[in-house]
Image 1 (cartoon, each protein chain N blue to C red):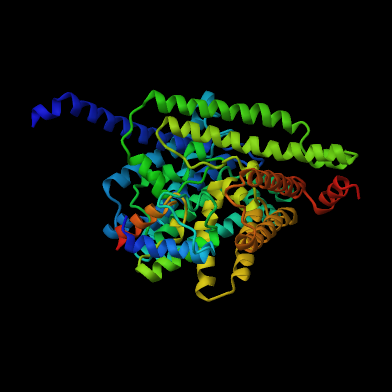
Image 2: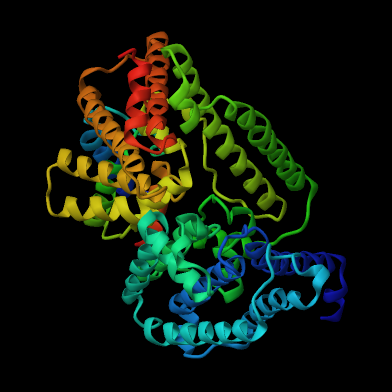
Length: 81
Length: 474
């Protein structure tokens, strides 16, 4: 997993979405299907990724089927860069 | 070269390929035929022929409007012409059954219309498809026009005064008494779900994400027999992946499919049908006395609707599974979830997913980039999404209230969890407390949903309010 992608995303999820900067996001932790990230914050996460990495994640891709864990999300971003 | 072709592994490979092709043709032909066979008869003559034909016509026209290959080559290729000929042949074949008296009711419930009028209809559809391809093929953004058109049609079919007007027009066209028109005259089997599949394709095309599908694949997707009546709602990209994957009939998949069908049939035809005997409905709502009995009706309704729809979904998923198609799931133990947000992540999931992808996410994104305050976005997003889901069941005050009930419930839960997230954290060393909170949450959520069904199950506001009054002894 590419840490230059993973670290800012993990920090964003813990600090901004979960409001708990100390929270560690494990690479294989289920983020969407577990309810950890709700549907509003999922859109925010999509916008953050677009700003930060210049990679568009379509509205129809913001779901647990496309990516549910940090490592899946990092792989998706890496494949589009 | 010759040796490789006749080697055992090549032979197995060819067999798998042939099985996949045979399976795809079977699903295509069976789905087109099932659109007619499953459509019930209606008081308007020949509607049980024309409505399924309209479903197929919409699929063909929208395929032409969205096909990247058709747009690139400007004319249909040989495979497309073959597929179109198969569809036309089946439609004509179904109509021609009127000449074979013993088989007249084999596919359609009532005698089909005369062949010349069917030929004219097929010609019109072909011209519309060509025009759609020519005009919209190179302008994906314009496909929004078709989304608006489909939505208007859906609204007309869900809003009783408009449905009645439509029925009167269709009656007049068939030379029947327009004065007797009723909204029940136009029960277009599967349209509510065809709408979702076709709009998904149109939206994916507009965003440039629609895979290149053949006419055959697209029509199979739009009217896929196991999911025709009530979903699950699949996405084009996912569905077509299954059609293109290698397929060989195998017992593990078939057994799993049969197990799902048996489980579903038990849920739907045994559990749900027994619960239906005392589930809340218009008749017993007006008669029942006492809070205890009223609660029993409400609980029975909550369980009946779950087992009925869950059972139906099991059957649909099971049938598709035997043919190597893995339809999305609709339910994941929704009544055991500790809050309303998670309930809606696990209830009619393919519908919720459609609304997220094509309504909620674009709306939220638009409001976020305009820097609206989060609570306002949450309110607007939750309430309008749930209102639309409510109205999709029918444009009536009760369905609207049911949608608002859930929209407001989700909004309140969202604000509460946002407040509690940083303040009320249960430490991991206290699992018992977490468990107790989850159980209390699940009970609360179940009752909120069950009370919501009082709006959903009954036809008018006054009757629903009288049930609420009895539930709480008012």
